[in-house]
Structures are given as C-alpha cells and as structure tokens.
Amino acid sequence: MIEALQDVQRKVKGVTLILTSKLNEVRATFLGDPFEVQEAAREAKRVFSEMRSEGKRDKEGYFLLPLGSLARANLKVAIPLQSLSELVRLMGYDTRVEGNYIKSKAPPTVVLDAARRLSEAYSASRAYPLTSSSRRLVTLYSTLKRRGLEEAIRELKKGGLLTERRDGSLVLTKNFNMALKILKRDIKGVRYGTKGNGEGKG
Image (cartoon, rainbow, N blue to C red; front, side):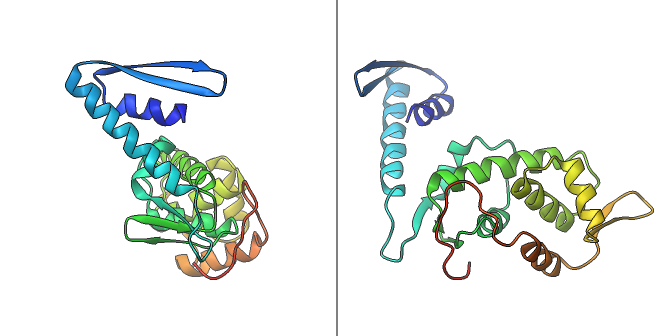
C-alpha cells in the first residue's frame, strides 16, 4: 500500500506525501496545491480500487490485472506485453492479455515482479547487438533463470539457440517460436515466485 501511495506522489509531482501509523492503521495525507491534492486523492482512490479488485479471482480462477497497474512495477523501460505473458506462462501460470487486462492464474504480485525483472533485463539488453527476436528470447531466459545478460547469452550460445554473425550481431539459430518451444522443454517445471495453477494454454 505504501509503495502505491509513493507511486501516486511520483505521478502527481506537486504534492508531498505524509504517512502516519497507529497500530494496524496507516493514514496518508497529501499536502500542496489544493487542485493537485484533489488529483492525488482521486488517483489514490483509483489505485486502491484496482488493488482490491486484483486480489479476487474470477469464476475460472483467474486474476485480472489492469494494464495500468504495471506502473506500480516501476519499469525501467517499456516491455512487450506478449513477452510478459510468455514469461509468466514459462513460470507455470496460464496467462494472456485480454483487452485492458492481464488475465492470469498467477497472483498480481507475481505478475508485477515478473514485469519489473523483465524490464530490467530489457534495459540491460540494450548494451548488446541483439535483433528483436533474439532480444525477446535472451530477456525471457535471463529473467526466468535469474541470469545476467552476459551469462544468459553464453548459455544460449552453448545450447545452440544463439549465434554471432560476422558483423557481431547476435541472432537466433531458429525462428522464435521454435526456439521458445525448445526453451520451454529445457525449463519445464520451473516455478517462479508463489506456486500457482498452470491449467490450460495461454
């Protein structure tokens, strides 16, 4: 909750957030220009409303995470939603994007943590001469296996999924879908974070 309020403060830059606690209660006060305080209060209510709905499963057992909630993951760089869905599926949770929501068997905290780590991998990957498809695979592998980019690239080369061209660029040896299929086989059974229900296909 505190992190969510701090995110509101970062979004509405003209306000100061003051937190006071008493027993199990935390009270938040925004100080600043009256108009910006009202804006911060509206944003806080919106965020808390989303957080309450996120904690509930639908009748099929899925959590619905609004795409806007990804802001709480403090992403370093933007990430492809398809890559995030692939990552969470590789972690063992049925996941897909539907409209403005990420629909997943994974709890929202797991999805947000995965998004944050994937974003860090994408940010680090900018230092390497990767193509768009090799970047997708390298960042997925790096995030899932908790490897640095250098180590992930080395392991994918050793596994025959990545190679270096004469110009120095790093490319996949197979098309992305085939490479992803091989990656799934190699890491079958991996669980990331809280255990979940991986029923169905993403």
